[in-house]
Length: 178
View 1 (cartoon, helix red, strand yellow):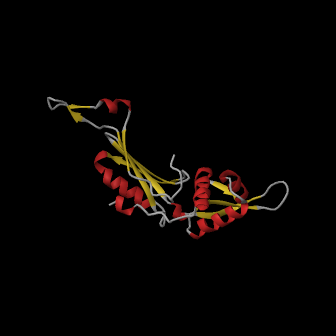
View 2 (cartoon, rainbow, N blue to C red):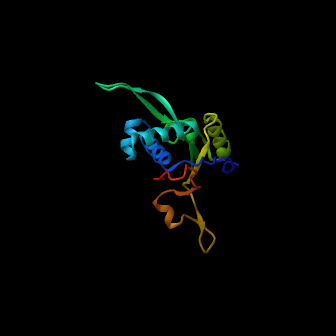
View 3 (cartoon, rainbow, N blue to C red):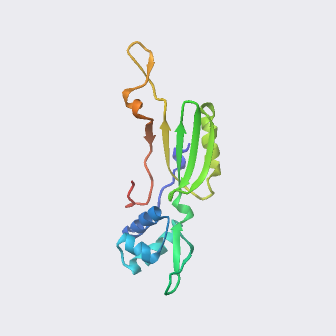
């Protein structure tokens, strides 16, 4: 099942977890930017980045050069950072999107409600190889209940919008979930 395929995250040091959280929020950054945003020293960030790179949670993605000084390496999320899957199970259509933790769209699929399982499989198959699935979120827009007479009705909580069901996020320890 999809739930069984959710990846377990590696144990990271506190500084690597902090740098990972900053990198996931920023999308990409240089070591000096990571140090500033995480409130850590440059040597601590260098060690944290090395730890993240060895776990494939961060990867060198280019260089940035300023007006003066030397070029700085730019880092982004690595392939082991993983992906999340969002499933919108509507009354008529099922829409599925798979995104990297930085929000980059990796896969999407759409089909009828009756094809929901196939649509989810299609999106899962389109995720990059080696990108572990970190979480799955399902939104169900047509939740109904039966009243005392047995007639179908929408619960009062559903009037405000879809009801959400989500499973726990398996991110590295210490990474804040927003």
